[in-house]
Length: 272
Figure 1 (cartoon, rainbow, N blue to C red):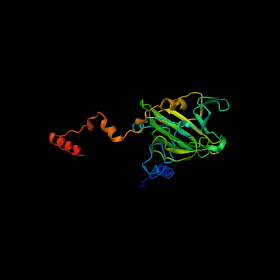
Figure 2 (figure 1 turned 135 degrees about the vertical axis):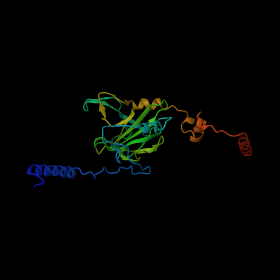
Figure 3 (figure 1 turned 180 degrees about the horizontal axis):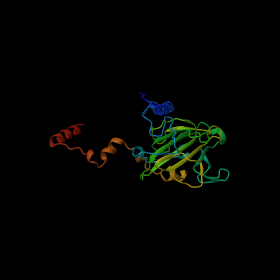
Figure 4 (figure 1 turned 120 degrees about the horizontal axis):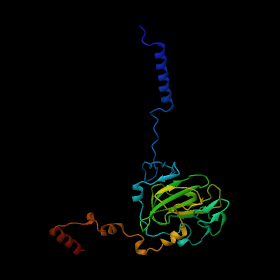
């Protein structure tokens, strides 16, 4: 008695061949490599954000944790030149129409006063306290880009973008103070004379986009935004963190002492 007739055997062989084809084409053990930020704040890279900081999609939505972790910025200043942006000029202002590019300019092109490539390698500074959301090269025409997220005094989630950099000096995830160096002015791989393409945005995601557009979308006037957020009092620029935290009216800040412990604490403080 035959165990398999020819038709059954043929179907069995076809099934085995199909399973073998699938396994060879996409084996189950082929797992994606572990991604890491590979810096002093080493951690698994966020979703869609590999170690070079470049999103795999044109739009990278920030998580709730990313938004909550944005440092609150008390004051904003210019990203290039001396204090308040002296010794720089704006070669192409925000929202100027560029017929050749077919759109409005989405940022300010900041240059050293010497022009052309005299400012190649000049330092670029973070405009406010913030957190690095992106650091990489999305395309040759953009060159190196750093995007820093900030929490404005009024609670808005803002971003400053520094493009065409010659070098990036900060890793993704780093927390920056106002005036920290993010990189140096560059040429975007020789596409342009050295300058900084600087943008300000109001956004809860990282979308690199284009340098020219017919719609402003989430872009803000960089000069006007910096000017509006520049006026913090000196005492508010860097308040000491512990007294500031203890001064808040939060239940977990209230220290409940027994009368005996309160008396002991009074004796200790009074004796200093």
